[in-house]
Length: 575
Image 1 (cartoon, rainbow, N blue to C red):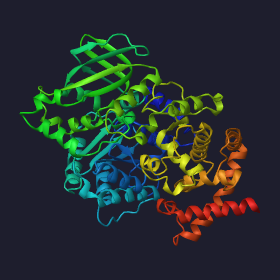
Image 2: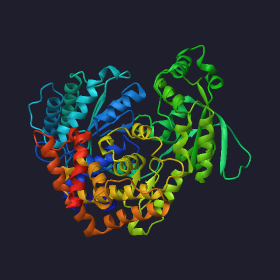
Image 3: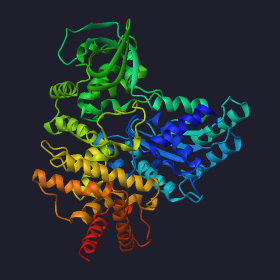
């Protein structure tokens, strides 16, 4: 392994706390991180994507991205279909080897195994992780009538530490594999590439930077000085230049840019159909700039060189619907289509939140949708980092918010989806719903998650529990076979410490209640001992509810299984 790749791998292992893995397993996680980060902007845990081991079909890591979200549960696929009225997916398969070269046999074998994996009746044995991925894929294709923008794309990456030099023999093998996979008629596009040290190094550097893009903005004016705003520009921009802001290096739309936009893309409702019809009409598209309300962008940093603007760490806070339609129609747009955009540069989070709320209130966004934009989100972020360094976590409100912070243990970053699920499992006793798409879960319990006036202590306690349990899995003090029940374990931790009654509502009582949970979990001995007491209860619940005695994602989706664990924890406390 060359020095640069070894250095990057070492940094990755250090920040992800993966020292207990073998070198080959570390490289699998590293390759998964680099490859999937190129397709997905938000934070994720690469170790959760690894499938390597016996009967893995040569799949060292897998990922399924649906409607821009990395999904891990069939419930998320259903929720996304219902929420967006369509499904658009990318299936990612990674094979990673620490060897210094590529072989045609590996390419051919991998293609053979993928064909078998997607067959109606697979013949090759699959381990539990690959079977779980198969379940996701099968669920996805059950809803093929919702593939309104084409079948899923298949992305295959064969990664080594060597050099890819377009060897004619290997290129022929790749082309043959792609042709075979396309003949299955299951995919819109098939991308099969070999990545060597040079390619993986570039992907790693890209993954460690916050979102950045440059575009030409010649028709802009600078607004007068505004308190709390470092700069503001308003004007019109060619659609081709705007697309540079909203697409990644793979040509996909950057879903993470709309994190602060509150609403997902609403598919082609009446308004969006009107936008598309305007762009599709040669007579109307030239007037698009005066017919559309435009785009509002909030950036934390900007650099200008003549007419070229470079934005870093930015969000499109208003214009999600327009952006998605423009992206869908990108092949039909010429240089005559312009958009009106407003670029606001500020590092003041209060100002950014005010702009986001104000621009969204001008549209038909409900108070419920704006709830996530209130000051509580910033309060949570500040509360998490206010703890001593050994107990400090980082709540990531924006995609890649902490990507460029050097030396930060990435496992200490808690994303909004993770926090919503952990809190719902631990404090609302709904771990069986944790596999839902997080926005749907938040919608179901809308008055109890991120509510105005909430105390940050329970959220921090849930985040600590999530982080510590993940640490136990990763090292591994707790066998990974219990991972499907991680959210039941979060609920059980609270029940074992405090019982099944709800947390107190008085501020000081609630803070003491949560401090007891975090004190136990941060203690290296007491926390692990507590979780160890819960594992036999999970085994008993599996035996009583599953005829095959196997703990899987189907098991944990039932309230019956959850209630049984809660009952057993209460019995343990009483004994």
